[in-house]
Amino acid sequence: MISPRLTPDPARPFQLAKFLSWTSLILIMGSSLFLAVVISNYAKDTILKKDQGFAKLLSENLNHQIYQRFTLPTVLGFGRVELKNKVQYERLDLVVRSTIHGFGVLLVKIYDLNGYVSYSTDEELVGSTIDKSTLDQVKKKGILYKVIKDPDVLLWPFKLRKRSYILKTVAPLRIERELFPKNAGEIIGFIEFHQDITEDYKRIYYFQLLITLVVFSSSIILFVLLYLVILRADKMLIERIKEKEELERVLFQNEKLASMGRMVATISHEIKNPLGIIQSTSEMLAKKLASENSSISKLARAIFEESQRLSRIVNDFLDYARPKEPKQMQVNLSEIINNCVRFLAHEGKKKGVKIEVNLPERLDFLGDKDLLYRGFYNIINNALEAVSEGGEIKIFFKDNDTIVIKDTGPGFEDSMIDKYLEPFFTTKDFGTGLGLPIAYNIFKSHGIDMSLASDNGGMVILKLKGEKK
Image 1 (cartoon, rainbow, N blue to C red):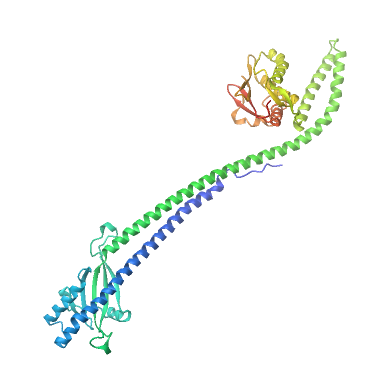
Image 2: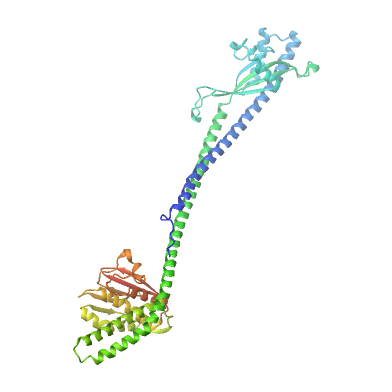
């Protein structure tokens, strides 16, 4: 059976999320720019329409004032309009200037029907002409507007000078009803005037700048928030993938161990009965031949000792493969540990290893005395096997809920901490590698958290999370 594997780089799937975040920035900035352009253009069109509306009113007022104050009196007084006449020209000039006074009009020109300038506030322009196509457009549309931009104008708001933007308006001069009712509305000439709208454009530029700054600032803030959310999501998802990988690894390991456990339990059970017969028979044979100092006596003793060792291995397999459900009774953990130490004291003395116990007189706990004895025995025996001659094992209680078993042996390798609790893993030349895993399962079934560490030697930490009395 092959273990399922995920992608080697857990973060790789989330590169898309980071790509999307930068794509989001481009989209946000692009849409913000588009929005700023739309808003500013709308504002520009609105202001321009306002200026055009004002120009239209001014053209109608000029038409009315010229007709009422100049055309009618001139026709009645002189019989006809003839601007070559100095008196008529000056009267028209007075009417025009008084009408446009205070309205920011830079230039006024009046064309005859042939497109010649008959009157201008700039007398040097009198006699010049206008393009006939322009007049044809005015006849069709009624009025014509055009924004004239200074070729040297700079686009920055604070650099705009006066007369940088001029609105040119060309409108027809028409007959009103008072003098010739039948000819009312007939075009008798054309009027052109220029207005300085630079200040309006300056306000538009300031408005565009403000809109752009606001939109871009809000876009950056939105992107930062979005990016932080994506980073947080990345971190959470990576953690989830790691947890999933770990869970799959544990499930696979458990499945493998369950299959192996079932097989081992079946084989061990079948071995146990004939092994028991071998052990009892060899023991009887060894006792009968004990008085003889022969090779047969030694062989009988060797068979008995090896059958004992094999029996312990079989029991280890069965204990791990078929863990017992712990009984719930009050026990004294200090007494259990001291019993383990007394049983192993002879082995420790033989190796020259000192075992020091510093525990409260009573550590009452709800659990299975036999299973807890087996768990503590396995840990202390494992420490005794790891410590060399002259070493030391200390067993003490701390933080009112933790038992620590510390030895001066080589300790556990940090990179292999998890491996030591896996069944059949051992760094020794002998043993089944089930001592610590069995102890771990026993303590786990009692709600005791068992962990391994190294601190100038090996250290097993047992945190009592189970029920204490």
